[in-house]
Image 1 (tube, rainbow, N blue to C red):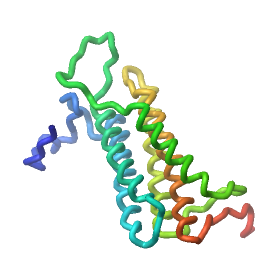
Image 2 (image 1 turned 30 degrees about the vertical axis):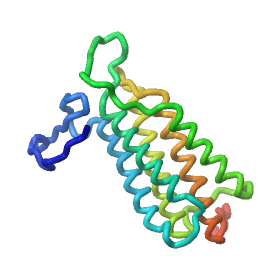
Image 3 (image 1 turned 135 degrees about the horizontal axis):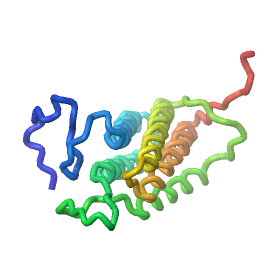
Length: 199
């Protein structure tokens, strides 16, 4: 259970912070950067959801609410480093990990939304409705989170689960399709890129 009865502890005043395992690391540590960027993407999704009342987005707000919770799961996964089976290290609790069912659900939601959309014949520009533009912003932050996670996974001694990497990749795909879906539901359609239009 999470208990947050004191918000400031002063323990981070010297530039370090605690992981879920209790280990202290610099606030610029790549693992902190990874789950901090996941948190940033989650905040951007929260801003996108503010626009749900502007139209009938076909249950998109419900999907976004679910994915926000999953993003906290992802942050929890990254916050407690997996030390691998051979270290003998025991954090004293079972860490929360992203599981395949969460990625599978994202794929099912992507497929359901995509089935209502016309095939793309050009890249799309971030825009259209307020919700679509906000979802595009969340998508770009999600891609940055993915880059940080992949970088972390490539670092000696660091483990990022394959399922967490799949989830963050699928999450940004979900946001791309969700942005198109938001524009479709609002009747505005895609904002298409016209290569070289202004040369």
